[in-house]
Amino acid sequence: MSEQSDQAIVQRVLAGDTAAFAHLVDRYQRIVYNAAYRITSNRQDAEDVTQTVFLKVYQNLRVYNPKYRFYSWMYRIAVNEALNYRASRLRKETAAIEDVGEPATRDRQYESVELEEQVQNAIYELEPSDRALVVLKHFQGFSYDEIGYILDLPVRKVKSRLYTARQRLKDKLTQARVSG
Amino acid sequence: MRDSDFLELANRVIDDAASDEERTAFETALKESIHRRLEFEQLSTVVGILDAVRPVEPPEGLRNRILAAIPATKPAKTRPSLSGLWQGMIDAVGARPKLGVAYAVVAGLVVGIIGFGAIWGTVPNDTANVFGTMSSYRGADEFRTIDRARLDQDGLRADVVLKVSEEAFRVELDFSSEDATDVEVAVIPPEKRWSGIVRAEGSAAFDASIGEGTLKLRQLQSGNYAFIGQRRADAGGEVRVSFEANNGASRVVSLAFSAIEQ
Image 1 (cartoon, rainbow over the protein chains, first blue to last red):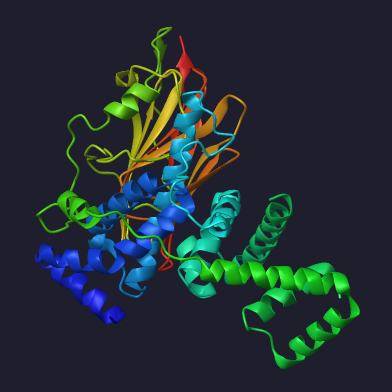
Image 2 (cartoon, chains in turn cyan, orange; image 1 turned 60 degrees about the vertical axis):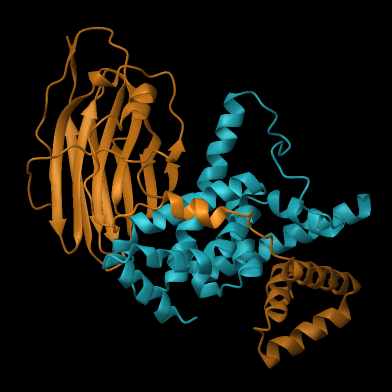
């Protein structure tokens, strides 16, 4: 479905056809959920984030600027929401004197393949902003320009940080494979 | 070739973004070093693994839950309800009444703003977006409005209210813009008696970072926000809110006050 179609749907919603918003949910709930899951590393958190993202997209639809791809704009909200959500949760866990040294709420049931679990663990150990970079590049297939827009970073910085993040992932995964 | 250059070139090769010349130089570097060959193989493997990770499926019923939360009315630039929405903030931020302190209200210094006007309440209608921490403050009704400003130009519209209590200050921002806008809230001067802004809340998602005496919010969307910081009772100063929209519009609002302990 073309980007123009997204914008046509946005216009319909803004004109009062609120039911049309369901088309955007159908189109993007899976990828928003995936991005949220890869950043929060928790299925329940990812579900909460996904619901919140769509609500905020709806609430802010009138300020959406069509010069940007709707997809990128929505992703910008999604990444911010996922990062904020995770940070907020960590604060609550800290306040409750829970063990946050290890990701206590992580969903350990999901991954059935050891390698994927190792990958997710390694990604989770990255700095949140670097995690978002890896998710946007490798799991969502965004271009460097789009990632720059979503994360509000110059493309040069996007690349250098992604390269460094990849290097860290390599080190972590190599270490995990050796010790595992 | 330095290691950092090699790393960059390796990533460009992996991304299939290297020129023929770069690729030739890279292959030469690989031939000269077993260590770099191993590095590159490992890096390529990791990127391959990342690209091959399978997507996860959303839980059943998520779509319906999302849609159930969407209002039936069309999205609009609505003014949030004033009732009770500050409660979470109030619980967190209110100041403890202690000594009788009178605040001398100083007229706001306005740089590049159009003028003042009647200000309606600036109240986040959703405090899910929180950045920073602020604890052990109570009694926000002790906050007093001491300065306010309105901005409306080039698609940037903002009402800014500065409130203080004995131990805290609060900047309330009711903001809308046709373009996402970078906003910086700075405490001037960033003296020791200020602890700067330690908490932000908003009705729209935001990305914030706290620096020394400053809070930077990147690509802020329209919404209602509040920024809270700690201060000593005798602290005075200036809170400066800078706006820079993607469309080039740029404005600064300065709010000032002094406090005199009696």
